[in-house]
Image 1 (cartoon, one colour):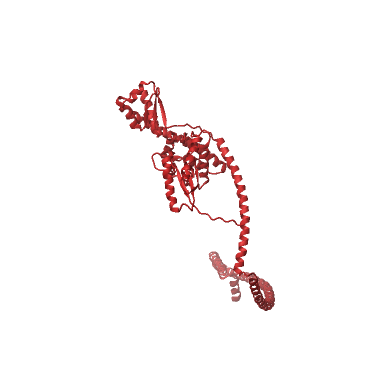
Image 2 (cartoon, rainbow, N blue to C red):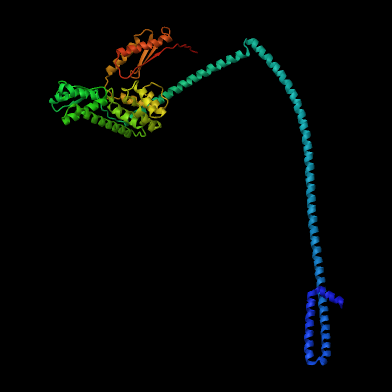
Length: 535
């Protein structure tokens, strides 16, 4: 019984057994209590028998449950053992397969390694054989080279003996022959190319200049050194002169202009080289004539008003020039100097209108060539800016204009265009060349300037005659419209030191015998040439 109880405890668990037993005990106690109330004595034996019978059936039931539990546990145990055996069998089979594959792979690698070792051994043997062959051939080549060098040396010695020339002499001879041939061919080629380029350039230049002239049509107002003021009557002449000449002296003193009052009816002539002062005097005189009150105090007042009016006119003309040419960003003082050119003439040609025309022509030609149009117009407009103050400063208008351009921070191309437009310096840009061409076109067109051809030719001939009058002068050429004369002296008659003195003597004679505008550059050239011709 104890053994079966232990087995039941094992199967069901001690807790379950205890619960069952407790339940049974409680039932018995309740039954005993009830039976004791009914019939303690009578029912005691019967209840006892019933309880024993129940306990016996419970023990049987417990034994049955224990047996079933043992059978189920045994069955689970056998199933678990079978599954474990199957899993172990599968693992063993998989492991055997992997081991077999790895063994096969190792065997294949071993075979490849053996093959590589055999191949490397064969290559090493082959390289050793080739090395031996190369060493043998190298020795043979060295021996052959020594023989060739010796043979070449003997041949060179024999050639030197036969020709009578050394190696260096022969090289120089060959080089001279080749140089002569190449030089001749290059000279012929260069000559042909220069001829073609010159023809093409001339044709293109003619087209561009013709197009520019056709597109540009500018009117010029010719100014002189004299202004005529009309009078309402001849009695006004006496009022202008004033008592004891006070009025005319005051007017001449304040304006710097000479008043010529002669027998010309109803007219007063204003004479002066400064066009601005002459314009101030003209406006002052016209205002005095209209006002009728002519005395020194009134003259001073009118002169001040005329100066302000002329100054306004100058600024308006400067703005007009920049507007017509499309040149912007100029310094205000430069615009004022442009306006002053309105009252400046050169050979009867108004300088401001001439500058506008040059700017337009340079811009048109720049557009044809694909150059900077704005820069070309700017340089053309400012090329004669020095003429606005050339009567106030020393030097030519070219030098003065270049200094002004530098002062007001104009570009290098503009400065070079100003310096080179009369050939004083070499042009460094296409813009400078265009300005030079436009200036020549504007000045040379018919009707632009009033100087007669006869006077121009006489001045040029006189200039060349003065230069030729000096001993040692071989040739002389007046260029740049008489602004420069180039004198070629004989080198055997005139030394370098004497050349400087001769240039000075020529300058002094020109200053004493000629009347000319601006300045004339005397360029004395002395050179010795050695010329040979290779045929």
